[in-house]
Structure formats: structure tokens, C-alpha cells
Amino acid sequence: MNQNMVKKLQKMQKEMQETQERLQMTEFIGKATGVTVIMLGSHQIIDVKIDDELLEDKEMLQDAIVVAINNGVEVVDKKTQEEMSRFTMGMRF
Image (cartoon, rainbow, N blue to C red; front, side):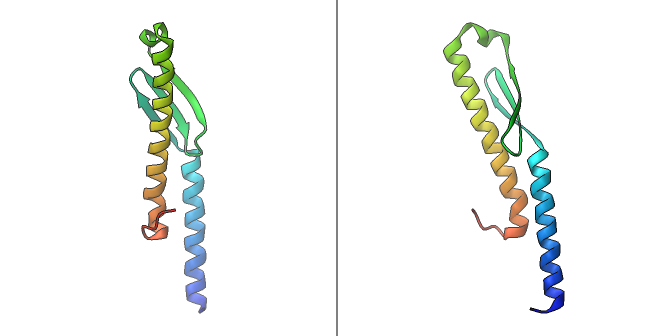
């Protein structure tokens, strides 16, 4: 491999790592009726907001929390795939 190609690959690897680190610390929002979940790109949940009217129905609240978390995971995964496709040329992992 020529020196120029090695430098390009090293630069791309550094940019990819920086993008991954930035995404890990980015906040994403997952929503369901009456529940909002805020999570980092690492899928760590950092906040949950619950509308007062859901406090009366435990089963509905539980379902809404699950839906909001799953929605947040989908948002994180979609954004990560979009960002990383610059480096993987659209290949899925």
C-alpha cells in the first residue's frame, strides 16, 4: 500500500472514531403517549418524563415506558447508521 493511501485510511479511521464517540454522548429522545425518554447514543437512559394522567393506570404506564424506550433505541440506531454509512459506504452491520 502506498503512503498516501495509508494516510487516507488513518484519517478515515480517526474520523470514524470521533463520530462514534460523539454519537455515544449525544442525547436522543424516545416517545410514547405520555412518556418521554432521554437516552445517550450508548443507549444509557438519563431521564424519563411521565405525564400525570398516566400515574392512575399502572399497566398503561408500564406499556408506555417500554414503547418510549424502544422508540429511543430505534432513533439512536437509525442516526448511528446514517452517520456511520459515510465510512462504510452503506454496508449494514
